[in-house]
Length: 296
Image 1 (tube, rainbow, N blue to C red):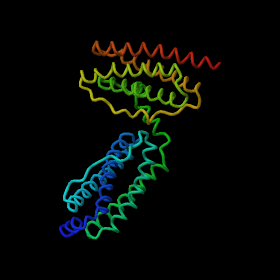
Image 2: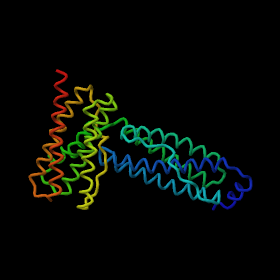
Image 3: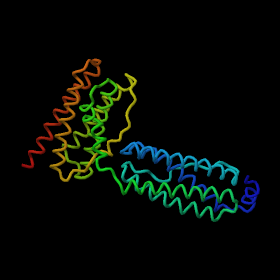
Image 4: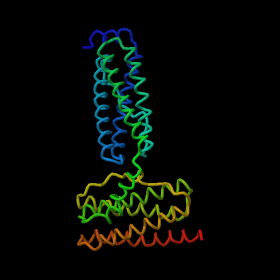
């Protein structure tokens, strides 16, 4: 298909177009990875499905660009993630929108410079796809779901456990780990915002120990470890007093969750871990209550 231009580029050592195609390959490789993360962070099923569809387009582009590169250069391209995808969904969507817009300009430029009609067509079509993707990401940016985080939170961690009509051992372990993830993300947020406040630093370290205590149970009872999407559910408190108040409510929910778990007939090792974590949360609750009281 590309035999004539393959020889042409080899004979003239024109590397500019190949360099641009290699850059496009890295961009697509990075996008596939980023959209995997964003799909997991998506607040609704509709957004998650649309991001998966966009990811499929990016995988197709990656395959097409790779074939073109091999045909023109006679060798495999390299694959590198050139930009790190944000961990926060909102920032990730804004990042994806800008990236897609840049891809449109880049791919149209490659199409204009290429002499092979097939190469021109592939990159012009890819540019059209990227413009369509950008429109979707812009829509997500301009039409956020105000209650989506709350809906997620109601099904996550302690609130999810307390709202569930029934609970299996697998669900209990999942909700427990989610809640510890959420606590860790919440206290990291407070420390980042207000500095290394001693209470939050100490309880953050305790949350890490809680996670370490729970993880062996997942392996022992063959329960899949849930993805950590807690950062998408954390809101920055207005002030330090609000942070302490949020900590009080979170620990109350956490204690109630473990109290509910302990009413079930569960294995002795799981019961021991749940009991220990409940007792630790009682201590955390007291610390946060003292913090609230310090503000008068």
